[in-house]
Length: 455
Image (tube, rainbow, N blue to C red):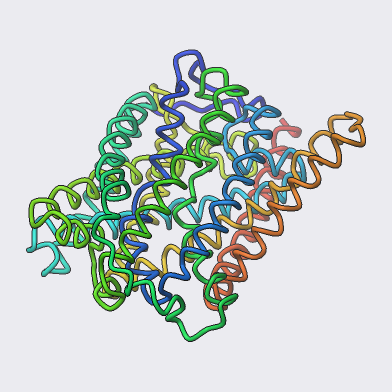
């Protein structure tokens, strides 16, 4: 049975004491980052060549900066919603709504991308799925809705799934990243730039693509109301998770570029499985493909959890429709989960007619664009929040916070630039589409207040 949460106070129905601990939060961060990105991105990056490692390096540094920013923000606020909660407290309701709207779009569109990647590796194990697009579409939708039901059952169940899938996904990636250096072909690294663009343009473009692999670095901040000792647990989980992911990403991508030729890598719909076939034969490919299926399944689970928590947190503050604030007896925002994944399912259906890699590339760029705007807002949120709380920032403290925020802000803008004109255009349109929704919410709230006053 649905329960209505007290949206004026933002009271949470469950106790943080029995919520997510450090291991579960690290699993949420790592599990959401290490997923479809590293398992399909080598094919997407093949058109650029070895210069894509420069994009990985810059993206990793930017992700560490963003992790530090979100870690500091988690010490200031433990409200659910992550980037939304920080933006609203810093900049007000309207900015908070736009960030929640954009971040929510990133989550459900990201779910669609992860489901596409899941199907690609499942097709490696079961060729009928790869050969029949209807089978592939069915597999993607079944995965989305199975995990939606798991998340509706409760956050502890979702956390357990996340821990198990994170452990299972890291094992094959670690094997490739650590052992694959013995199979490298030096000729595959030359020429370094295959894109025909300038080196700067190529690195910017690869940075926008590789940032997809870091989306979710703020994951532990989103269910903050369900985290044990969030002011300590969230910063540690965020920073440790990003460092672990960065080491895995760069080593695995370098191995993929070195083992397969650029043409073969670009055509592959399961690139790391093909790398494993070269290294260890057919059994190796099957094991890596199985790991990829588990990995993308775990990421889909984590993104599903967040796709409910973000609109739920916004609805608690009355900047999203009240329907998103309704929870089950287990304390899960069922309506938010269902609505989010209906939209993810529609996006999967709309894009499944494209080739797998093409559909994946477009969706991840759209999701990345929608995430970068919240990241840019959050870069300076700490300063604004502290000032709005009446705190006096000392000179050294202000310089440090400002410097960190400026790095995060510049990085976010640069990554938006690298997303390309089409993606920025569609992403901007999706962001603007939220304005009428915000106006409608405010009108309904005003009418509701007027009615209560009359009676």
